[in-house]
Amino acid sequence: MTISEMQEEIIRIKKEKDICILAHAYQNHEILEVADYVGDSYGLAVNASKDSKKTVLMCGVRFMAETCKIISPEKNVILVSSEAGCPMAEQLDTDFLAAIKEDYPDYTTVCYINTTAELKTQCDVCVTSSAALKIVSQLENDKILFIPDPNLGNWIEKQLPEKTFAFYKRGGCPTHFRLTADEVKKAKEAHPDALVLVHPECRPEVVELADFVGSTTGIMNYAKKSDKKEFIIGTENSIVSHLQYDCPDKLFFALSKDCVCHNMRLITLGDVYTAVKGLTGEEITLSDEVITGAKRCIDKMLELGG
Ligand code: 13P
Ligand code: SF4
Image (cartoon, rainbow, N blue to C red):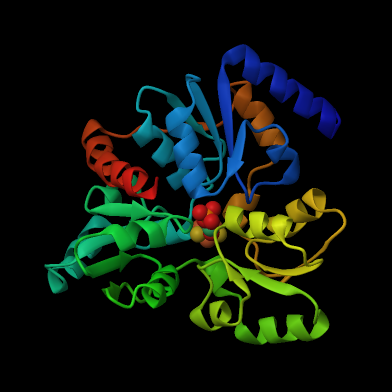
């Protein structure tokens, strides 16, 4: 089977079985081409809430599939690869969070969507990189416990000086953590006309040197709309190749060859094919208690995020 024959089969089967394929922007290009919706974490959550198909196939990592299940418990939500987790989402469990919260009793607990469903039951509201600023700025409490990513938290803190933030300092994304300020300086020297676009999961000293900071979709939209012709991309390297397809007249350079999320990269078109056929994939199951507790947190995000 060729790539396009496999894609045609996936599209035929998903229509026959009423399956909605959601793909995070970090997925391979051949997967994006068969998806019903492609986007950042916030976009995936919003689309999961709007789509009426009875089965959702998540081409992304576990917390994204859990978010779909929490929003639409009546649907079958299938995670294409059960091995695809997000290391950041597994950095904190409920006991650890309870211990942290003891030090910050009057703080509002804001969790990044990159957390487990269980952890969300213990938080007040969750955020994504694209909606964090909007959501946190609307919270009445000026004291914010932001978990687990201190880099995203730091970026929000700088934009909301009126609020007091506390962080879990050892959290964060191991993929974006690899990017250094030195690499930004070297990339700028190599491509002096290029703009540097980075994800807020990068370290503060990397964010500091960037021309634009945003979610995966935010970075892509910025590059597409910009009059500039060259861009250095500081997020998962799949975005470099997607942008080159979307904007063939522009040039895109990876900030680092190491910005690769091995969990996102696990999923292949072949996995999507066997999953739509019902041969592979993990059906997400969550207890009613977890769904109810985590839904409160996600509903608050959707309410404040707009
Ligand atoms: P986005 O919300 O920007 O898609 O981020 C998700 C993610 O896992 C980035 O590392
Ligand atoms: Fe998790 Fe980082 Fe991979 Fe995103 S890039 S899924 S935050 S490990």
